[in-house]
Image 1 (cartoon, rainbow, N blue to C red):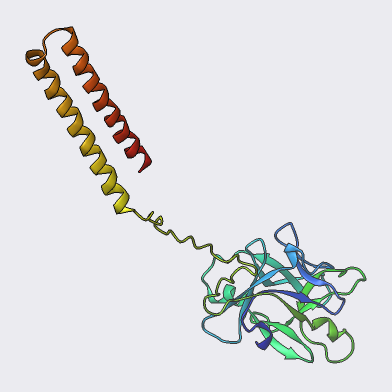
Image 2: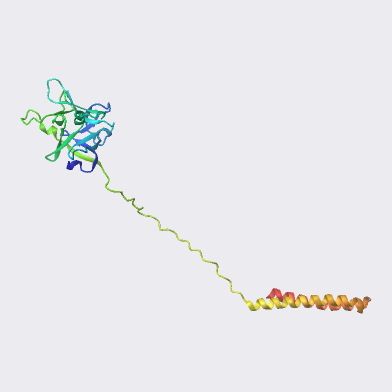
Length: 249
C-alpha cells in the first residue's frame, strides 16, 4: 500500500510500457501508450474495512472489475472490464476490489474475487493490448513479468489547508497623508490701523452731514452754499485720504 499512500489518482504502467486504460466504450479495459490520457487516469478509493484493499475508478465513473468470464475459450485468464458499483452483495464487492502487493520495484494487483493477478497481455493474438486477470504461472509457461505494474501518482490528497501564496512582486501600498493647510500669519497691527482709519472716515462723513443740515439756516443764499460746498470738498478730500489709507493697509 506504500505506493498508494496519500494517492488520489494514479496511472499504472505495465511491462510493455503501456498503461492500464479505460476504453471509451465505457466497458472494456485495454493498454494505451499515453499515460496522461483521461482513460489512463484511475481514482484510488480505499476500502474502509481494510487498510490493504483499494478500488480503482475510471474517468467514466466505473470500477476496474475482475469477471468470471474466460477471455478466450481454452486459454488461461479471465476478462477485466469496467462496471458500475450498484449491488451491495459481498461477492460483487470482491469483484471490484484489489490488493496491491509489493513485488520488486513495482506491484502486483491481486483480485479479492479470484485471488488472481491483473495481467497486461502481450502483443500477439488473440490477447494483444488486452487486460485480463490470471494466476501466476511460476513454471515459465507464461511471462509473469506481465503481472507487474509501476505506479505513477498523478494527484495526491492535500494534507490540511493549503495557504494562498502572496504575489511575488506585490506593490507596496501607497499611503496618502492629509495635512491641514498652513495658516497664514496675521499682522494684527495692520488690521488695527485699517479699522482706525475706517472709523475716522465714517466720523468725517457724519460731520459733513451735520454741517450740511445746519448750513441752510446759517448761510441761506448762494454765497453761503459756495462756502458750504468748499467745506464739503475739504471733508471729501479727507475722506479720500482715509480710503487710500485703508487700501494701503
